Amino acid sequence: MERKICVSLDFLEEKHRDAIEKTAAETGFVPRFFSKRERDAAMAWLQESEILYTGSLTLPAKAGASLRWLAFAYAGVDPFCRPDGPLAGKDCLLTSSNTFDVTLAEHTIMVLLMLLRRMPEYEERVRRREWRAGLPIRSIRDGRFTILGAGHIGGRIAEDLKGMGAAHVTGVSRSGRSRSPYFDEVRPISELDAILRETEHLICILPSTPETRGLFTAEKFALLPQGATFLNVGRGDLPDQDALMDALKSGHLAGAAIDVTDPEPLPPEHPLWTCPGLILTPHAAGGTTLPRSRDDNVALFCENLRRYAAGEALQGLVDRSQGY
Image (cartoon, rainbow, N blue to C red; front, side):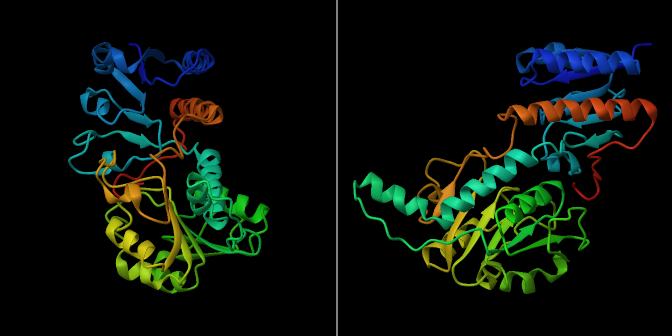
């Protein structure tokens, strides 16, 4: 009996399909490729598929009883970890893709530099055709940074910050540990209040879990020193967005940059669009718009397919009870 793989992704190039077909042949699987427009055909093949490789949040719910592994092509797997989510009632492995570290780190450095060098204010002056410089700026060099989320992506951001001369980078994780050597220290999230009081620049890359949703309240923002910056490239339900806007309008925060919001898409009438001191991007930091991200994504799937066929542990394996 054929061991089938359903691949439903629109970012694949010919070289990616060739790599998947080659690995599938070597491991005894038969893949079929479907675009988003071929949903009906994908669902038919999916009924007998053992593996689903996709970025769709809805297609997994249509899988048959044969599904044993959902290889999700992106990092945000929180919908699949909820009791009423697309995998409800399905006993299968779930992996997320940890291949967006480069693009997320570069986006973070970009918006951080924009805040430190006062680009939003200079852009406003340029729009008004005012040729005026002289705004006080800050630098990554000699700065102190806290990264809330000390995993693969957090480690990449820490590496880039240290490469640009950051004086101190603190990582924060549930366990107080990290595999990255680029953190000066890693502390447990149970010490978050004390950590925030010492934080110049806070970078958040946390997943969405019951423990992180709404974590950043007005009280948490108030713990940050006057003039701190806040960046969020994790999940939009981390901060109380009204509290964030209040902290910016009052001047307590010198600036903020968020790539994620709650809800998404952000409604046109939402006040975040015009909040002073805020750099807002439309969930553009990650994704597969960077060619390297696409290549790494497929390479990870192929490596995991070899591991799966050999009965070995998969990379990026998600603990559905923990939410990441």
